[in-house]
Image (cartoon, rainbow, N blue to C red; front, side, top):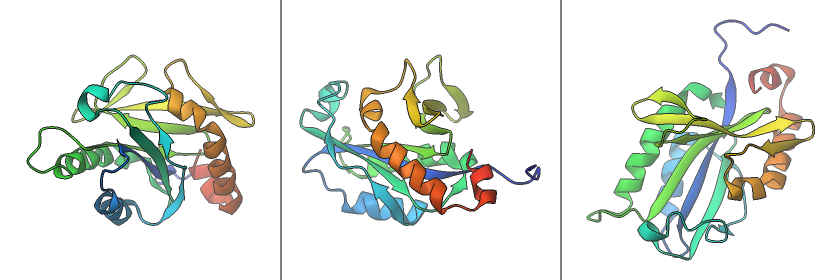
Length: 182
């Protein structure tokens, strides 16, 4: 089955939210739903400190993180704009402060991969423009997402959750959408 040239590949948008456990999140979630639509599924919140202290100097300790998957597939080409949007939202969530109180990492999930956007260049990242790179963080092989040498440990630990979301996504899609979500 061939895909028409004007048919863009789709993906489920996702947003990873890292913050202090007591940092307000309601306004962030309202903004995320306004941008991406209804939430399909949230991972349980988990201790980010259990995986790394990378952000401790900026945020302190006691960090929690959650991965939010949105229900409506959309074009993958919006990833750069999504990262620019999340960067601006991080800045407005702490008015009058030079420090962020929340870290937002947008990405998307397809049947074959999990992609994250970043403002940091690295060998495995592809430049999208305006200071934004994209990385294939996890790839689907056989019956599960699998890690790469650069995959973040907290995403590796979320593979069972992501596998379950992927299988649910596949089960609810039409054949045409399955082809577009690869």
